[in-house]
Length: 418
Image (cartoon, rainbow, N blue to C red; front, side):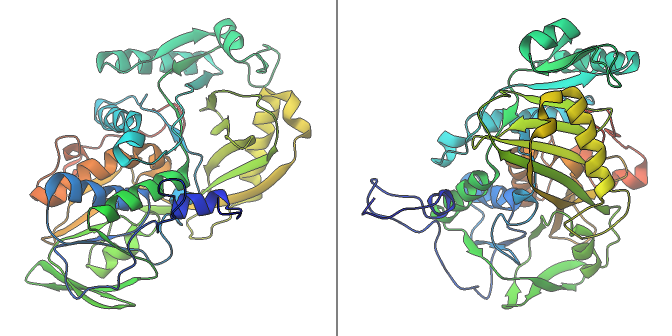
């Protein structure tokens, strides 16, 4: 291309037109003094919300404010798994809605998000694991979600590298399998939503941190930012890991805890794993990226914090479990390790909806489920903001469930402990 070499990141950021003429990823515009809707947080969920607001609801002028760079927070620090095999109806329906959007997302955004439906296995290591798997699969069938219970032999047939010996510390007794599940490319998802939203007129403002909220008469009136004051009467807060801090600006105490969530990747190698394998017992999950890296997800640290590196013992615990399941990986070198910051609600389900402050909406508390929910979250949150009423799929996740006691409690029921 004109005799120059372009990195994958450059391709994702800038794209190309007619394979020759390069165009910017989105319009570079300064922050304007007022907007009809402002989205705080330029990650996958925030960009998706802005896109669906502009595409489906025609609400007027929209801005996305991001204190860093677009897609640089938790969107860039996850293990890219997409699935919908959750236990409780409320969660299963929301994630299935998202999965259906994933299946057409590349065409919808006109940008390849590298969605690969390679299936997800949730391993069972004890009799109780298998009972839980059978219960969850049955619940999925009632909602029309694809799910299967497999024996250990059937799992071995599909994943020959897996050690299913009964003498192992973690013997594999069987698994659930969702064929439509898979992985996507996190950077491509953020860039795809950003480009599509920009083409619809959304202003995407990087390096713009919200420092305060102007609230009068119980209604949001504007935002104080590092780039100046913005007048607006509708604000959607989608800042993973930092939602409680935004809540404090509005005088709200959000029922959230922020924890580091850890993951690590290996050196690149030839294709050895063509699916996603998860273990609830150890909170370990494994897939292989298009670049050949083993992408391994670990658990969250028990302590609260905003550091993007976690405790070594969490990584050690997950690495030991992965090596026991796949002994041939014991000599694979790890390239890097990181931690994202996740908001976790008491019932391990998200908060989507209105707040006591009129015009102020929150989308947070996704825990380990954020990436897979990206398009579905944005879709239902956009509806909630545009109509000032929750989308039917978002209604069960309202903030007032913590005062009424109508908790969903997906904690540990979704095939991997939160």
